[in-house]
Amino acid sequence: MISKDLSRKESIQRIGSNLFRKHGYTTTSMQDIASEIGIKPASLYNHIKSKHEILVHLLMQGANLFVDGMQEIKSSSLRSIEKLERLIGLHVHLSVEHTDLMALMMVEWRHLENPEREQYAALRENYEANFRNILVQAMQEGDIREIDTEIALFSILTTLQRFYSWYDKHSDLNSLDLEKHLIQCLLGGIRV
Amino acid sequence: MISKDLSRKESIQRIGSNLFRKHGYTTTSMQDIASEIGIKPASLYNHIKSKHEILVHLLMQGANLFVDGMQEIKSSSLRSIEKLERLIGLHVHLSVEHTDLMALMMVEWRHLENPEREQYAALRENYEANFRNILVQAMQEGDIREIDTEIALFSILTTLQRFYSWYDKHSDLNSLDLEKHLIQCLLGGIRV
DNA sequence: GTCTATATTTTGATAGAC
DNA sequence: GTCTATCAAAATATAGAC
Image (cartoon, rainbow over all chains, first blue to last red; front, top):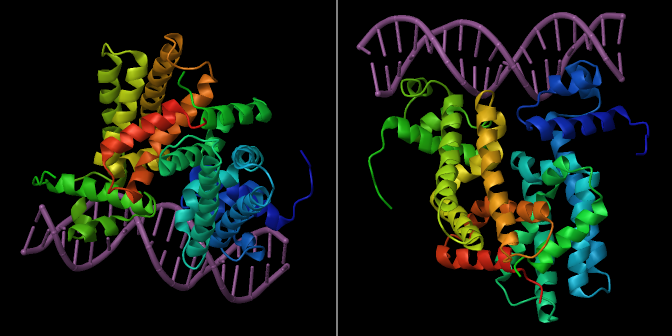
């Protein structure tokens, strides 16, 4: 754990992500955030423009983590099945390191309004399209069975996207072991 | 589609489940619900006690659908691997028939307060424990590989629990085919 | 940069006429 | 059973003193 001094703005964002995650964006008040820091609600507005701005910033920050991760894996010279394994690793890594952000990305993006809403949706769809391409590629390379692509994509992505909530209850476990088991479970199947 | 006359109370619950699902429990106002029906917000209170009561009723109704389904499958004389297939079918069926309820059960239960919160959590945990038992049983019966039980349980349950959102975008597809593909994907694995 | 005071809006809910 | 009128509380945000 790197204990770096946070600017007040960073504190607000960090505490916001934690409270938004625990109680939801709408339910969390500026009062809640302020009292967690130890100042009055009005003082928050010296550092941020609005409550909504906090949410937007957090969601875009989270989305960019995936964009960057995907870019690196996509442009690598790995075999597609290995890219899939790396993608599972990316999700495990981000879930462990940015648990609150991952939770927000799943639940609170519905409070976005345009243009941010469309922008966020575009990033998400782009990520999904890249994931699909790699999955189809792996099938063509003969490393994956001929199954229903859309169902498989949905199942794998859903599991990875919700992994943060599972990790929350099992954070004592080694993340490399988790990654190994997830790869086996998602790519290897379970039936004898 | 059975077109049965709904009592006003049932209308309120139905419309509530739809709006809560689309915009979230907190964001949906009594005004929103009332105007969808064509009455004034104050009139709602002749049929329900509070906004919160609507949510509680919907969540408990949804939870009971799973309790009943699990009870039937659990007490059957099927082989465990077949029980797993029946459980997948249960989730597909409920996702198709009660899409809004399924969405609420995943997202809005956090607005429950005790004692309902604990009651709901208990039902959920009980369902999960039964699911785990059947999975372990199938392993002991030799129909499932020796994998990490907890990760496999998490992956399967998460996929099933979020299936409603995927079905929402693919509701043109035959639900029996979907069930078949999900069974293959979740139990059969995808790697060659 | 934080405070107090306050404006403004919205919301869930109640009372009572019809 | 629905309406109008209204209450009470909470929340976001601003203005201006210190």
